[in-house]
Image 1 (cartoon, rainbow, N blue to C red):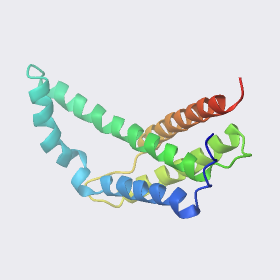
Image 2: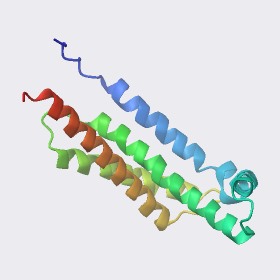
Image 3: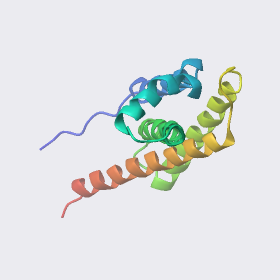
Length: 154
């Protein structure tokens, strides 16, 4: 029989959130602007899609950059859910608290980008970040339900 795991302390719950938020902030800096990532991604995309026109490659580059928003915030949401989750908390409370924090970070990140000369803050990017956060919360809640199902007696 497995012994219950001790509850994680605040540092072990929140440190991954802080580190990932730092990664997001770093990716929002000048070296990761569209004009700079194009120098790396466009030749790679050209190698993957050799017959594609420059216009097509630019669209794929833009879509890749936007999907990065969704991915970054999906990961953030999973980490935030882990940090804010409490045993007696409903899944709706967990989702609301996690999404509220992720959206606040998305807004702050876009505000930060508005001060970076090669970047712009964009409400569309906040929407993409929010979509990623919703995805991450859904994944975390799905794993929570699966885990609860394994623990309940059959």
